[in-house]
Image 1 (spheres, rainbow, N blue to C red):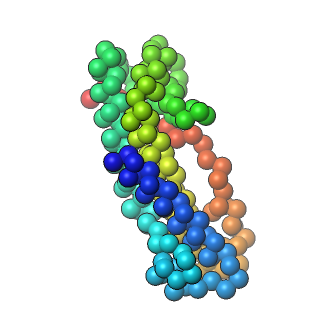
Image 2 (image 1 turned 90 degrees about the horizontal axis):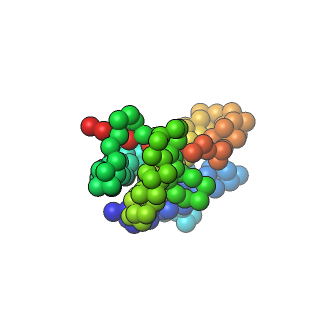
Image 3 (image 1 turned 60 degrees about the horizontal axis):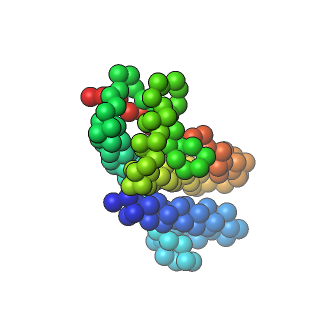
Length: 168
């Protein structure tokens, strides 16, 4: 599932880029956006569809991570916050007494890391698609205002994504 989600995430990102490229042209073709095939622009998933995929991946990650931690004898007395480190691994945020062991356990499972990465990619694709959809609506109403606010909609300055795990 993680491989399919990663492939879907990559396709979604190409679609978002294609939509932005089409919107920023001097002579946008509304039919191409609607049909998704004219002008070589791929169809894109809606932000809602991408968010549903991201939510499913997040749930899978939480279940897998909790199972791995339980198998290693680690119980969570308080919620545990995780985020991606700069090398693509998973790191514990905050002062958990077993942070090192937790990071090692989670990073040793390649499928778990792939699920975490797929969730991040899909979540970010959903966010970018949501911004693209907002920009498209604004552009349809007022092209000048859309172009004036372009930086707000196309910013790639994204903070690390965090996941909270808690015992049930």
